[in-house]
Length: 145
Image 1 (cartoon, rainbow, N blue to C red):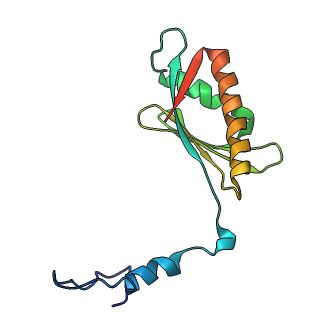
Image 2 (cartoon, rainbow, N blue to C red; image 1 turned 90 degrees about the vertical axis):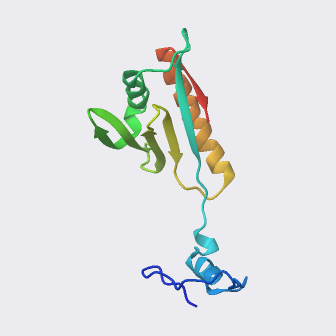
Image 3 (tube, helix red, strand yellow; image 1 turned 30 degrees about the horizontal axis):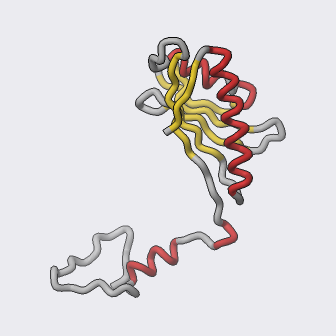
């Protein structure tokens, strides 16, 4: 039975057997990208704490952290006067990734798609070095999850 993503599929009786070579398997295989289009990305969520009291940082401090990347922010989304998402680019115009304010107040970094782990490592190290400098300047430490 072919899988149709727009219509409900036929009901299966509890006695029906799903064959490993079924159309369901082919649906996923056919929907995949060609190997030449594969890429990698990284996401890390960071919880900020004040260095002196170890209290969670305030919404204003989260904004200070995001604005610390100001020269790299090329696009931002705001909600209730808070930046909730910022797209980052390097000086040469290449995509770095996105910073997103998550519901628990944590900051998520979503790196751009890369072709190798070495590229991801280099990008992530650069981001964490910047984040560390911003935190140092404002008395903030971070824990990643």
